[in-house]
Structure formats: structure tokens, C-alpha cells
Image 1 (cartoon, rainbow, N blue to C red):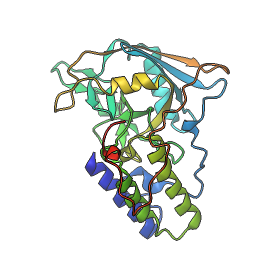
Image 2: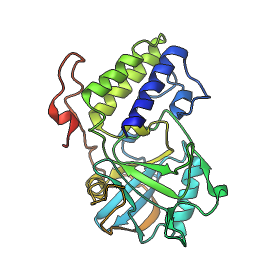
Image 3: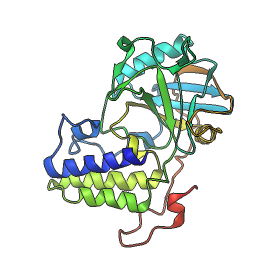
Length: 279
């Protein structure tokens, strides 16, 4: 994860020096930050009629709004698989404690956990500056950079790396951007990440296609399943079913679990020990 965060820092510096570039390996490099909305739609409740996915797990229920307008290919694929029962009674396969859990794939005849039988099943990542790997985000996964397959994961937090000092370093890198609008939006984004939590190292690396709005406590529990040093879950926990439905006005919605509601300390202030640890 530290390598990913370092890559993001480099990406921020590259944007600072040369503007948005479509040839960069990180999807964030192609973002039009000038056009990016600061509403952060993931932090707002779903609207009446929005497509949702209901995850019934051994540890409780999670409800996620799906963003068809930003990741239409991935959402369509996910809905088709969910409706076909592909994700039913599926084990949580990978866990990075307090950071994310991974599932959605299957074991092949050699016992290897995979997400596809053929590379033709790969989906090109869909990147957008409107969606970010905040807490509870639903993302596509593949070991092949720039693509995703049947596997998916949900993230929780990355306090070990996304410390106050790390965020201030990112902000320092963005401070040299000459375009005032783009610079201010990037600085606000880094502040928001520190405030609400998430796994910033995944930004521009994966397709983000959904956001938890109910069951944050369950997401947290699933990211604390015991796992070995290789990241494989050592305790059997199932996604019992994934059901596609629609959000109705008046349905229950969790309050977004804020990580650092006090905000980011000034760069010259020494960050607390809590910035690099748990809640």
C-alpha cells in the first residue's frame, strides 16, 4: 500500500508539473479537475429510484448505491452476475485488516483463486473524478493493471499510510499547480479524504462503481476478518446473496462515518499518534 500511495504522490507531482496527461498509468492523470464537482456524491444519500445492491452477509447486511452513469460497463456486468446468482454463497477471499476485503471471484480446477476464465472477460477500468475510494466504496478488481473482472472489493480505511503528514505532503505537491481552480479542488479533495477516510492509494487504480449508504458497521467487520500474512482470509465468512433493487425515498440511510471530523492539522503541527493507528 505504501508503494501505491507513493505512486499517487508522484501522480500529483506530475499533474503539478505538466497538467493532465492521458498517457500516465494512473487514471487520475486524465481527470479534468477543473470540471470536477465538489458535491462528492458518495457522501450524499441515494435518490428515489437509484439502482442499489443489497449484500446479505454472515455478519449483516450492506446496501450500496450503484453509479450507472459513471461506470456503465462495470455496473451492467455486476448486475448481470448478481441476478444470475454468481455472487451468492461466495466466501470473502482476501482481507487487508482495517483497509478492505475482496471477493467476487472463484477457485479454478487447480484451486487457484481467480476472477475470470479467459482474458476476454476483462473489462477496461472506467475512471471518473466524481468517484473516489472513500470509506464503503465498491470497486472492481483484477491483478491486471487498467482492468477488472468478476472480483470486487469494498474499502474501509488506510490510516497507516493516510496520516496527516502524508496528506500534507500531497497538498504540498499540489500547491504548485498554476491553475487556481484545479489546485483548489485538489487541495479540497485531500482534506475530504482525511476527514471521511478511505484508501486514497486506490484512486485512479480501480473502477469505483458503488458506495455503501447502509451497513457501514458491517463493512468494518468484514475488513477485520482474520487473515494470514498473504492476505487470505483464514475464517470462512460468506456473501450469502447479492440482490439488485431500487432505493425508495424514506429508506434508511447511515450517517457517513467520519474519520477525522476535526480536520487536517497544519503542516507544521506534529500529527497525533492516532493518525497512524486505529479509530
